[in-house]
Structures are given as structure tokens and as C-alpha cells.
Image (cartoon, rainbow, N blue to C red; front, side, top):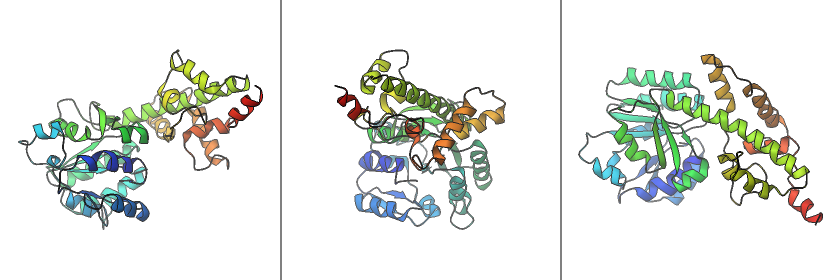
Length: 321
């Protein structure tokens, strides 16, 4: 799990607090510093593993979580869970398929493997097929999340699970996922959790650009953006992007950006033959912003800077009186 960003909020704010006394959360990250920080913050409830295989070998039963849902399932058949969340498809392949230290180099019999990464569906399909080939009793699910680090801390994340509504493992999955999130959607079948997330990223990515452009018009016309954001919040321009992830600095007191991968959504549309009018030019905006030295390595809200938005709006509006 990428515990230095979103995964860290999962671990510290939700899972660790809900573990029973004596239970431990086993984690691995390629970032040694992130692992050391995690170990320091959770000396009794967290255990750092040396690779993905070791985490798989240490995975524990759902009943180690304190929750009403888990209590209701104490008589369920024993199943062990492994959650993964990493940045890209190549990382997911490495975690599961690496020939030396991957998850599938050890037995995954009777395990439920849940990948919460936002990646391409082709990679998830390959990993799912490899899991099925490795074990007849294991199950693999795509279950990407939405809500960002704020949602992770608050426990209000949305999980989009690639399964049908009558999946035999869904009740178990919901019991554990509710330790981290508020909304769990079975999306209809394998890979459809990722489909839902990519559609969400596509829509929110377009809204972010539109919000940045509209805010820029307002600021250049002399309007205070925090006021304009409040107008949007009660009008037809209302959106989660405006309310929680507004791209204008200073509009919100706490607003860490969420990097949505619009490119994956555009690729998915091309793969299924869905026609896009806005996606390609929007993707070009993000790609150009990424290459701009003023915006390099920053989150998707930096599009406001890229389109020429004035980040010093407070000083200039104050000077106008």
C-alpha cells in the first residue's frame, strides 16, 4: 500500500484505531521513509514487512476489526484479506506478479484480494486471471476509491467494487470497507469498479477545468473568489470540486488536491468506442500543465495556475479597497 499519501490516512485514522488489542496491521511500501514513519506512529499495532509476499503471508481475518458489521460475521467462514493500493498499473503487476516477492509467489488459497488502485482495466484483468490460475478458492476484486485524503481521514470514502450485488463475498467486503469508507457500491461485475472510477475521474477532471476558468473570469472582473464559490455552492454550478477541492488558493481552509488520472479514462473510452468531445482537449490541458515548470509535480488543481489564474488575488483585491 502507498502509505505515504492516501494509504497513510487509511492506516492511521481508521484501520489502526479499529483493530482489536493484540491485532496488527501488516504493511509494505517501496518508500523506506514512509515505512519508518508508519512504524514509529504505530509501534504496537503496525508491522512493517519486507515485501508484498510477506504481507500476503501475514494477512488476517476480518474479525480483527472492531465494527458492528464484523461482529455480525463472526460465524462466517474464515477468510483472509489482502488490500493493495499503489499508484499505477505497473506497480500492481509488480505487487502481485513479481516472480521473487510478489503476492502470488505464496499461497492465496481462501484469501480475498482487493486492489484499491486506480489503474487500467487490462492490468486488473491480467492480475485477476493470474489469481484464478494460482488458486481455485481465492477471489480478486477491483475496488478503487474516491474521496481523497480528506475522505480517508474522515472515513467517508466511496468504494466502487467490481462485483455483482449477490456476490457471496460482498457482505464480508462491506464489513471491512466500512472501517474506511461510508459508501460501498457493487458495480455489477469484475472490472466495473474501475470503470466507475474512471468515469468519475473523467467527469471531475472536466469540472475542475471549468471551475478554474469560471473562477478566473470572476477574479479578473474584481469578484472575491470565496464569495463566487459560495454562489456556485447554492446554484447550478455546484459540485464537489467547487465545495471541497476548489482550485483557487485561499478559497478553502483545508484543500489537499486529488490527482485524477484523466488519461486512463480517455484510454478506456477509446477502448470501448465511446465518443468524446471534451476529453481529448481537457487531457491536453493537464498534459501541458504537467510539462510546465511552474506546475510540475503538483496536483490537478494547479490547472488554475496554468490557465493564468491570479494566485495573489487576496492582496490585489484588498488593494482595490
